[in-house]
Image (cartoon, rainbow, N blue to C red; front, side, top):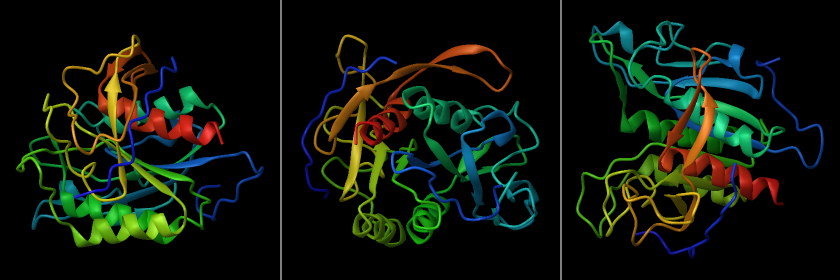
Length: 261
């Protein structure tokens, strides 16, 4: 099990192929692992990566280049943005830039698109993405990693073991880079989801504008911080919407920590 970090409550309201070097000491870079990104609509994205886990004869699961790995402009994009849930990453990346308009983003897509036009975020892809961030953090001057993915289909008091993911987290810790993860939205009060439960990952829960923990927020041991769990963003079709949950809290908290440094 992870070590407790202590509860922190915040009430704050709300080119691509070469290595990126921060232009100023106060410029921050957040790596975000999530569904997909169209960097043509988000100028804060400085690099894109796609990491997928393939199923035999299911080519829809590939990255845009037809393989299970891709880097550079367009790597995190998808052909069809009408698929349910595919815009999750596109939306939550804006949370970080709402907090700090100057923050830069390295976006890692882990979503595979199945033949049924749904998305699947495989645990192996998540683990490999964390490892990629650890291996490439200095290359892109990454200051923090935020993961708005969570599952809680395991026994309270335990945490799934993933050696690749854990190694990536420890590699980032050794570089002084914090890993933040949403605790999940399953209304569990005695546990947080995975990977928020992993040792040295900061589990971030969601609070309302009045400071009350959202009823859907997974809490208890492993919730190390809380942050505002709602934000206004412009969705892929250009409409202003309000999004909620721990997926919002994790990138918001990460951006706020970096901004305050």
